[in-house]
Length: 428
Ligand SMILES: [Zn+2]
Image (cartoon, rainbow, N blue to C red; front, top):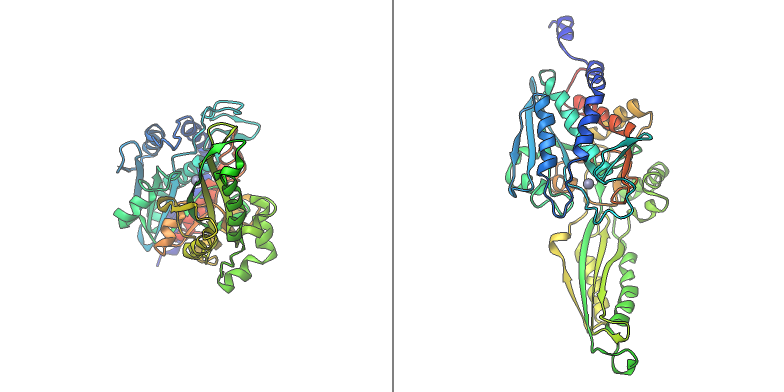
């Protein structure tokens, strides 16, 4: 009725961006403090890092709650309702990070939080404290302007992602429907060239081979557990030949040149070739006491990644057929570490909002692709809530000397804030 008057009252996108940018030093200080609070998982004690998040939210006047089904793994949650009806969006990120062991090979402390040569350093810089901090910062600026938005926004900064989400995202979704929403965005590392709309599943298997043992020279007395293991590993590669039965539309999409080249650019040459295929990694092998003894037992663990469309049962059928030739071998499925693939539409409006805002921020329009690795997004997708991730470069994720370009922190804050702003009906 009074468009001019209303316009004057309404915060525009440009003003939101200006407000965020004006405080950038404050955001960087928050990220550094976050990185300096160790939260390796295992063991998964995130209380110190969670306190950094709480102090930041407190400094921005954002009310929040702690939900801690495990006392040493608290989750920080917050929500607000806008000035009118609209959809509910959830922002999600994790606080825990990969462990560092004895930190061998690190050129500086894994918990330094140093910024040097345009890089933010520290365990979790990539996966995913930079992304989680970006979501928290973006949320706090949207919170301050909530009357200009419609619908509602929830923030879930969780613990326990690196070991499966049992006490984090999965727990929240199983116990409180408020955190489901109509759509979810997350800033796990995707590289600024891609938005992730799907991810492979995992099937983890333990094989135990039992044979007679013997003196190392008496090979005529036993088939040897380790030599059986070597033959079994060779045969297990057959699972990589299974046709996943990808939905035809998705297959056509994944064969597009721009999609293939975006995947290879971010994850490395060859990644597009394995995106729609099952893969096998033998992650651990344990056998033997001494070099001149033939082991009587060998235990190995396989990490099989399942593309969209491939059910674990089909892979297990192939594995069981192979095992008919290995009667000395028993198989156990690691149920708690196995999850189906997950996906949601690659042409959902949120993909367009993330892509156009990312392009305006970075000059690069990201392409929607699946992920090789798993994230908490799957818990939303399993419940039919579209979940997308857009975050910094995967770079040295899970490696020594983990770091991320500091410019990408700013880009991810801006992209998530602007995409959420648009999704929640903010003035363009
Ligand atoms: Zn992660």
